[in-house]
Length: 231
Image 1 (tube, rainbow, N blue to C red):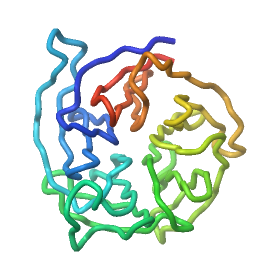
Image 2: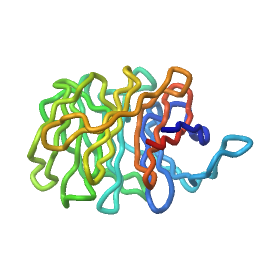
Image 3: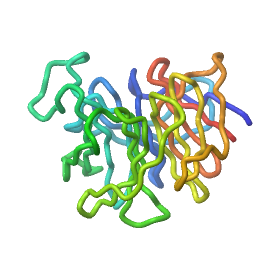
Image 4: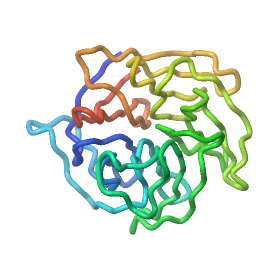
């Protein structure tokens, strides 16, 4: 297993990221803007090229996915700690998922997190059509949700609190547990642990998570680093 710092995010508090064919999307927890950047291997200056930057109606953005040609943002409550309130902000302690146009940032759809409470992560399932996975902080679970009707099809328990980024792979699902500094691979039916990555204290803390080929990328909302993990 190896952990390698790649570059700094274009935002000061990157709390979600998603790899796509176009590049890497990164969301800022403070401004709730989303940037598409090139994915470069480590450079002397630790920076990368900005492709475009869009606004969003998200608040306290703490997770992101890409699917059906659109972005999906995890809204983790109000963002008034960082900025003045907006009319579209979620209420305190309320979590929601926004489907967002990737060119303009326009909200296409808004759904509440099942069971109420906040969320720190989500993933669009590329192995089963019409499915997204959402962390539910209030119950410390991961919910499998069918987009049509926004119905919960299955729920698995999570081993630790403060679940963050989620990555669905063919043989399971990776979930970040930020406070415990572990990224745990779980069985999608039982929630049994299949594998884990322990992030040492010497490395940036994991928050958002995305697949990067056979590797994983995570962002650290404290230091701004984007980091590559080879499990």
